[in-house]
Length: 156
Image (tube, rainbow, N blue to C red; front, side, top):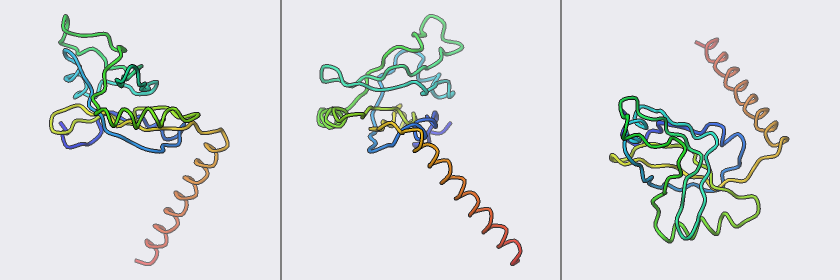
């Protein structure tokens, strides 16, 4: 089981739908068997977002599936979870999200030194033409890599 900061769960859609301006690492307050379920990779970040309320950071709409052998100690999969941040970090995120169109999106969940961490991104939404441009750019990079690898094969 990876415990060295390698993402266990990634929100691949986030970088496609949003421009990521800044990232921050936060701890997650988990209950019951959520840690065991996370270690197995049973979570989805697709609809997740974070919000600052009353000086505390909260994570919403992140689904951590119930642990198969947990039974009574399982908690609801889509409950809100407290994010563990310092007050200065919370103030910085609050200032960043007050800008028009900025939101906090979870980019990945991983374990670092035995503690569950979430990578939050301060994001702005992309327009449809931005997404098309990103796809075209990625395809061009892929074509360039393919052409250079074929050239290297011919030279050998």
